[in-house]
Image 1 (cartoon, rainbow, N blue to C red):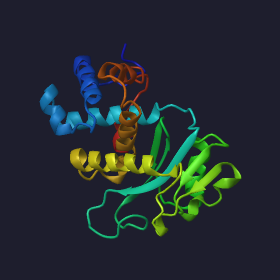
Image 2 (tube, one colour):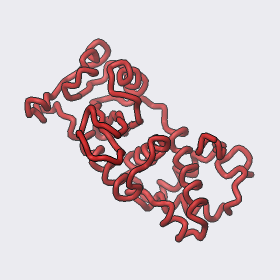
Image 3 (cartoon, rainbow, N blue to C red):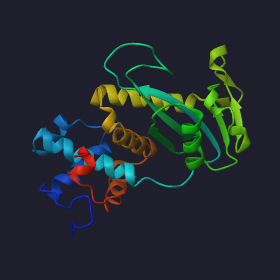
Length: 234
């Protein structure tokens, strides 16, 4: 039965859907629509739409479990067609906020800005109250101490590690994210960036799983209807 699943109203045979799931499970940096179209024998447009349906599924079927233990938080900036200022305040780029539990899961999402009100609301939703949070000195994190154990490394003063206090894990994730986006997708539009982030988050969180287990985890998420409008907004 396709009703109520990601396959509903799809003209693509289930065999090609499952092959796509497995190719995603094999890939560490993602797969382009051009590469997929050649592999499964569909048009590039159909492959693009299929991949975006899978990314939408991953975005909306993620775990609701909060991060705990020691969690690192940070933002990065991706996209943009023009060279310019790097880091906070970058023009033509989209901010992406991330939180990673050391030895555990990553949670990332594009955000409209890196202001305190924006980032705090996401942290309260995704990080368990009382958790030990590590961040840099960005002012948006200055009031986290009211709900969390908060330690800061001052990058502006060239401080990157102080004992067990650092943001190296999340910065490593950002490096992988940018290599994945620039190497496979080049400059994804702001409109679809959240879906690319969901795919990267899934790959990061299943990085120690075998392709077979990753494949099964994707299959388990397929009870969601994804319309053309949800992908294109039209």
